[in-house]
Length: 348
Image (cartoon, rainbow, N blue to C red; front, side, top):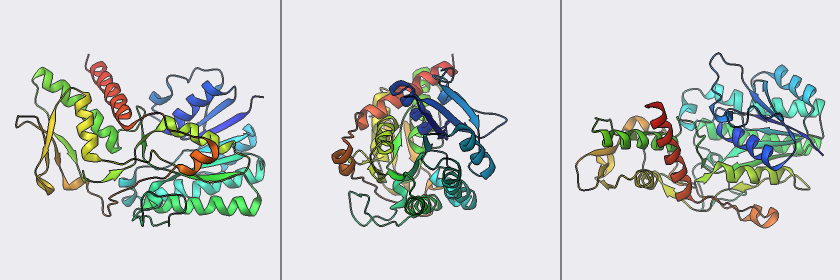
């Protein structure tokens, strides 16, 4: 039977991927919530925005009335919250706004469900940034919460709130820990998309003999557990359809440094390079040439760095049968190929 699914953050990577997955895998009606904007960017929903089962609706996680009205009107069977201020680096500059959206926003969603659709199943997107300065690797759902950024703290607070509402009001509410996940719909402010977009530019300028500025990076030795967002959307849907609400970790179980990401990205663009130097003098150059492709800029270091995040998704694999399908190399290749096409299209 067709049901109704309300997804916040529909214009972002995860919201768009979730909507696309559900339009293909179910016959449900999908309601994608976006904040009203004078210059909305609908690029991520272009492929399905004309689908008759998709409905774009206005709403704002910082406004209780708008969330209440949507839940009251739509009466969703599922409420999937991907809306957030999700850029870790900016969270030091605007911590109050980050908590307003990421933490109080979750309360607004839970309150609306409690008041108007208490049998609605709620999903809250958590983050490996909640673990922060990790005690052990890989990190499972039982790892202590030790965030090192306002963003991580905002997600940790949301996790506690979901637990409180689940236990206090018997709501079906889950808050899963999502390790780093990327894809062709990733925002340009994130380091992975920043890398692949710049790789596309540099590759094309090398071909045409144009001058270019090297890719500017911060801590290239930071290691992350990178997955494809599309793999995670299947896991989220499994969590929402389990018999009882239970939180899980979603991760690939492997780690790669920013340094590796850069190298694989340039390789997929057909540019062979080599890292050299140390500290602030670290450079990535064209192989056997002195052409600098990437360099370190202290501007991109964070006030508090997390050196490694490495997830343990064994529990959801055992309980629900989830398995990732897209490897790290395939993820990077897909992103590079997408940005090469976008660059050529924009300069044609």
